[in-house]
Amino acid sequence: MSGENIVDFEFSDKDKDFNQELLKFISGEYNPVWDDINSATSDAHWQITLGMREKLATNGWLTMHWPEEYGGQQASAVRSAIFNEAMSYHRVPGRD
Image 1 (tube, one colour):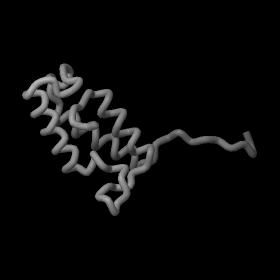
Image 2 (cartoon, one colour):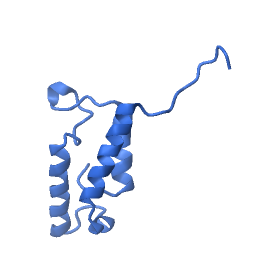
Image 3 (cartoon, rainbow, N blue to C red):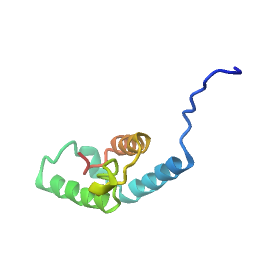
Image 4 (cartoon, one colour):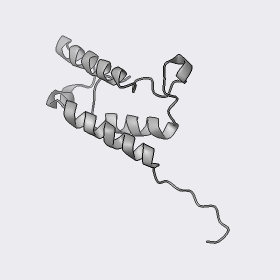
């Protein structure tokens, strides 16, 4: 393989740390009612969605891919993908 370009698909240590932080957050916040929420179909679901959205915003995760000058973290596409995959997999409400 000498002289060939090899693509490294390994996450960086910072991305691995972010993934662990995110999974810890999700497990601490998990509510079985999430399994029934695809969208805010009732007032109760809407309140859960708003509450989770506020927590995600507090952590800076709702706009993490935005440029810093607009209040974001200018997160990489990889970091955004880690976030979106974890949120979707665990069916966490509150993100658009």
